[in-house]
Length: 251
Image (cartoon, rainbow, N blue to C red; front, side, top):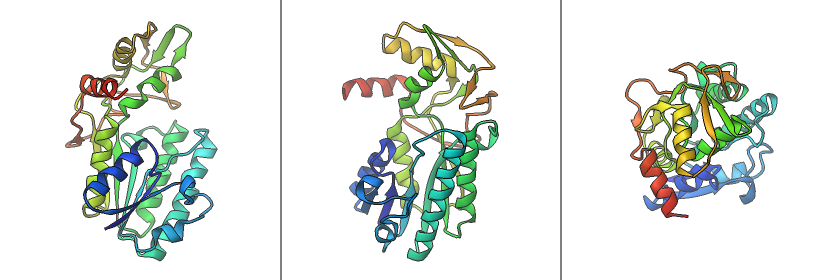
């Protein structure tokens, strides 16, 4: 199959491209750097000519509420116009577990808007909702930083390794459209504050995490079920310790 990966040079995209090529698929790693821009439409029609599947992993360069909504809506509309013209048979979009539970967050509202465009596009689809990536633990810590203290939510979450995300996305892309949502998550559920403290300790960061039930994540106050998957998610292979060991081995 010919599979076009939008955002094919990013953290997840580059791994999805490698995974799908190893399976023998013809894969186009599409990004503005390669002349394919979903915001301006540049290069889209050419990239999608003859494509069977499109995997959308693009992300907004700005997380400001209006900007991120405009990004996903503009990108989605341009992408689906090109997909319909090209006769694409399967659209795979990466979204976030719990996006529909956190309307206080501008970023989550934008992801829900993206999902709505996917459903209404007329292209058979699979929406892959993932939990947070282990690779983002440092960023989560920084977002809650208050000097030598880090204030983070005490809500549960279930982070996943980017390798496991990429493997799942590649599997869904190579499979039949679900015309629905598939959830993926890591194998280990923990409190956000506790997991980030483990990360800081493992990286010899002396800062301390304070658990606060009212601390906001992407502008939203979390409940214990906000960021965890429902019944029967696909679970990744790597827990925190295994992921961290692999990360250190490749540095």
